[in-house]
Length: 85
Image 1 (cartoon, helix red, strand yellow):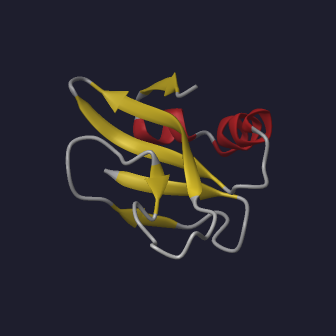
Image 2 (tube, helix red, strand yellow):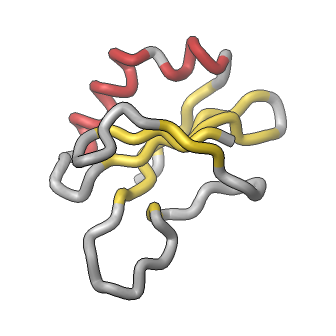
Image 3 (cartoon, rainbow, N blue to C red):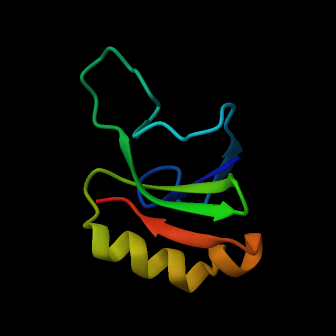
């Protein structure tokens, strides 16, 4: 699956994630107490996760959703989005 980032120092970057479900935060464990990117959206294609959208800690969820829609991740991956509360 692809991890897609909105906001912060790695805005609009992507990387591959291993596993079948995305972690709630990225990076999953820092050990430093540093703020981490939080999972906001999961794009599913059939029975697998195609992508996960992470937002910077300082961004409100509505902004992450707006940017994700603007960047058309669902269309790009031909997937249905699930918003993570």
